[in-house]
Image 1 (tube, helix red, strand yellow):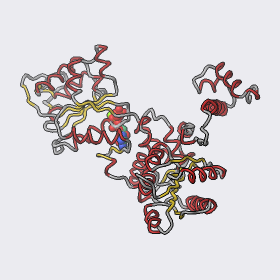
Image 2 (cartoon, helix red, strand yellow):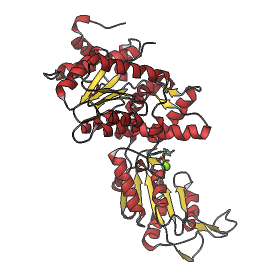
Image 3 (cartoon, helix red, strand yellow):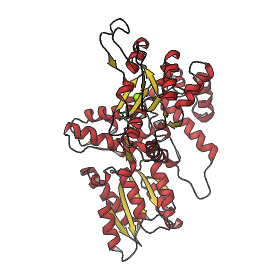
Image 4 (cartoon, protein in one colour):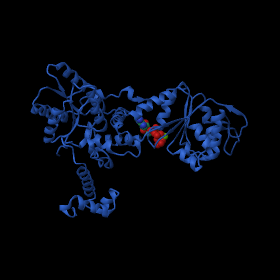
Length: 466
Ligand SMILES: Nc1ncnc2c1ncn2[C@@H]1O[C@H](COP(=O)(O)OP(=O)(O)OP(=O)(O)O)[C@@H](O)[C@H]1O
Ligand SMILES: [Mg+2]
């Protein structure tokens, strides 16, 4: 099978040299992206899983060592080549200890670089394990099982720690699978209440008629079937944390009772008149838009404000794609560790597909996808594109800026966009074996629009295949 072209990032602040190398590398089949500074390089690396990094070690500001660190931490599979100054072999040795595949000393001939690159690629093909040790997840990117690299997640960890120190009520919102329960547990485990219980109750999983007794407990004979006296979840969480999941599904009657708990810190068991005082921190979670439910009259406004003292919003995974490599490593370690597997890595090509997929089921879906992919490797030590579920394989990375080569005199924007349109249309036609109606559906276009676009974009060709 033919090798797919390698995506390469070259980092050097000397623009003339960098551009010359970039151009020659593209002549040799690499898809090249350039960065003129360490800062820019780190930004590019966050957005895109390059196969190869070529970086000068000496850069103003963030230097090559830091770029190398960022690259290897995120992508244990990346092939990194460092460029060192003359007489600085010590730096090169350090870089290799850090996980670089090789180095080249300035000044050098282009062919020498090409040679270093090719042998590193060849070595990698033979042995896909290099640099894995460096990939071990660092503490600063996690809190109680929640991992994340992106700024939003790092801000979230800080917020969770701050909130943990208080006893305020917290409302966690976010789509399914974004980690709401994990965040609630993290708050509890970092709080002074950690020695007491974290009690979770899913309001949507318990029939409404039973939820009240489940929450508040009941006395003997309170209702048919109440044969004894029972403590509710609220009492079990005394001095600890009560996690009310899917709060949006709670009935109006129960909403009123919960409001009283939050206001007065007291309640009665079902069928009892004795009032019980309680000390509990409440964390509620929902994937629904409670503010809208308030506006529509299906959720009590006063309760909403009582719950929403500290709002915490978990962003969907597709809005923080740069967390995907780290999450993938996290799940690989966990799943492989559980099953006693050897180390398994993910090819950069597979990682690019994973980073391009929209993940409607968020982190939970990613976790399942990795588990499935592992099963498909049948003992091989690397997950490749073919091991991914078909819908994920189909998400080739968008033709985004990482693929663009900017010529000296700038690129032709209109022409470039037309190229993207044409490639999307062709790809959907390939997928549907040339069926224009289905292809149009794939792109959410009208069939006539698709045909018009084709005519405009490929005027010479007339109608396309089949
Ligand atoms: N940031 C993260 N780091 C590591 N694992 C995560 C992260 N976010 C979620 N997960 C994992 O994803 C799965 C779903 O997380 P969780 O149950 O907390 O989501 P949720 O928002 O409560 O979902 P739902 O709305 O469907 O109940 C869990 O297995 C959890 O371990
Ligand atoms: Mg949940």
